[in-house]
Image 1 (tube, helix red, strand yellow):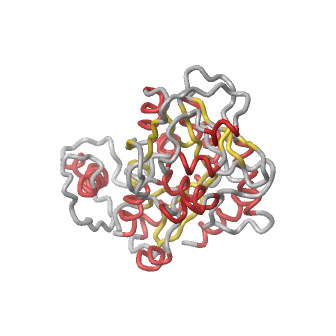
Image 2 (image 1 turned 60 degrees about the horizontal axis):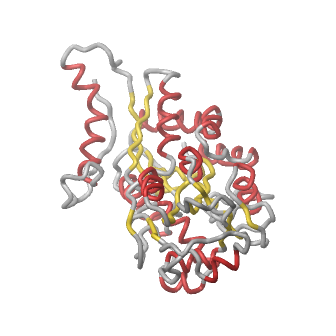
Amino acid sequence: MTVRIPVSVPRPSSDSNNRFAPQNVCRFLLFVLFLPSLTGLCNIPAVSQDVVVLVGSGSSVPAPLYSRWAQEYGKRSSRIQMRYLPVGTSEGIKQIAHGTGDFSAGEALLTAKERKEGSLIELPAVLIGIVPIYNLPDIHQELRLSGEVLAEIFLGELKTWDASPIRKLNPDVQLPSLPIHVVNRPAGKGSNYVFTDFLSKVSSKFRSQIGVNASPKWPVGVPAERSADMVDKVKAEPGSIGFVESQYAAKANVSSVAILNAAGKYVKASPETITAACSAVEAPKWNNFAVSLTNASGADSFPITSFTWIYLRTSSSDSVRATALENLLDWIYSDGQQYAAQEGYSELPAPLLAAVRKKAKELR
C-alpha cells in the first residue's frame, strides 16, 4: 500500500536539535505519510490500504482546535485521517508553498508574492482574539489600556506599572511601582502579526519602528516560543505583560486587559465582541476572506480580532489526496464548526460560513 503526496523538502535548518525545525518537520511528515506502508510490510493489518493521512502545519494559536478536529474527524471513517504540527505561521506557509503537507494554518495574510509563487489561497477557519495578559498580584479591578499605551509598553518606553499614561487610564486602580516585564513572541508567529497589525493602526510611532510583521524586532522583552509558554511565563513573573489567544488566557485563568476600541469603548474579548468585530468588517457582502479585522468599527467590537486561516494550494497533481482534502474542508465548514466554540474559539458568522464553504468547493 502506498499513501501518495507530492513532497519537496525545504533547505535544512542549522537547528538539527529542534523538533520543529524545517528538516525535522519534513521528516515527521514523511514518517506520518508512509507509516501505513511500513506497517503493511510488517503484516500488521491495522491500517487499511485505502487510508489517507492529511497533514497540516502552522500556528500554535489554533493547535488545540486542530487537535480536536483530528480526533472528531477521525471518528467518521478510518480511511481519511488528519494530523497537525504547530510550527508557527511563517514556517507553515513555507511548508505548504514548498509542496510539503496538504494545508497549513495561521494568522498572517498572505502576500501577493506568496499567493502567486506558491499558488496559495487563504480561507477563514474560525475567529480568534489576541488578548494582552498581565500579572499584577494585588490588583483585582479591571485593567484598561489603549492601543497607544500598549505600543509604548512593547516599545520599552513605559518602564513601571504606575507610569502616568497607565494611571490616567486607570484612575481608580492603585497601580504598584513595579517594573514592567515584557514577554513577546519569537519570529514567525501569527499572534505577532495580529498584535503588530493592531498596534500599527493605532500608533504611528509603532508603525514606523516595528510595523506589521510576524517576525518583529522587539526592542524589549523575553520570548515565549508557544502560546502555552506565553501564559506560563506571565503567570510566573509578577509585573509581566504579554499577549496570547483568548482561549489560552481563559483556560489558564490569567488576567486580561480591556482594550480601547475604535468607537472609544473599553472592550474585553468574548465570543460576542469577537464576532461583532468580524461582522463590522464583513457585512453586508461577507466575501472579504483575506482582510484584517483589527481595530474594527462598532461599539461592541474587540479591537484585536483576527481570522485564523487555512492556507491551501489552488491545484493538486494527486487526485486521491485532493478528494480527501475536499472531504475534510466540507466537514470543517459544517459539523466541524461546533467544536470551535467548545475549544474556546469563535465560529464564523453564518453568512460568512456559507460564502467560505462555497469558495472551498470551487477549488475542486
